[in-house]
Amino acid sequence: QVQLVESGGGLVQAGGSLRLSCTASSSNYAMGWFRQAPGEEREFVIAISWSGSSTEYADSVKGRFTVSRDNAKNTVYLQMNSLKPEDSAVYYCAAGVHLTTMIWKYDYWGQGTQVTVSS
Image 1 (cartoon, rainbow, N blue to C red):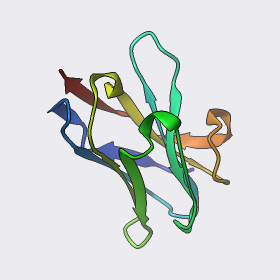
Image 2: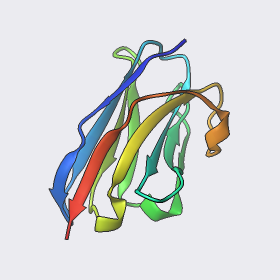
Image 3: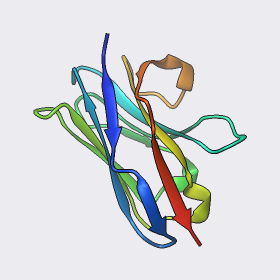
Image 4: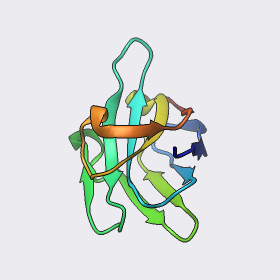
């Protein structure tokens, strides 16, 4: 069992930045970030391999979001720049065996953190 705890969400104006963190009880997993807006399905945002050498990005966040990890701290970071109101959602981190964009392949999930972008 892997425990995941997200932090760093909040309210920001459009064009601003936020950095989310996800601290895990183990670093031996690929890590993904997903988001879910009210009334919408949870969607893939970004993911990083356990080594940090490979990443995957949703088209909607390319050029604006980046992901990194510090395995010594068991922490993954989601840097979000040039935020838009449509980025508002609950953001979840997840751990899985392989780097993938597919939500059903992630085995462990955090509780989520709210990101709200005002226009």
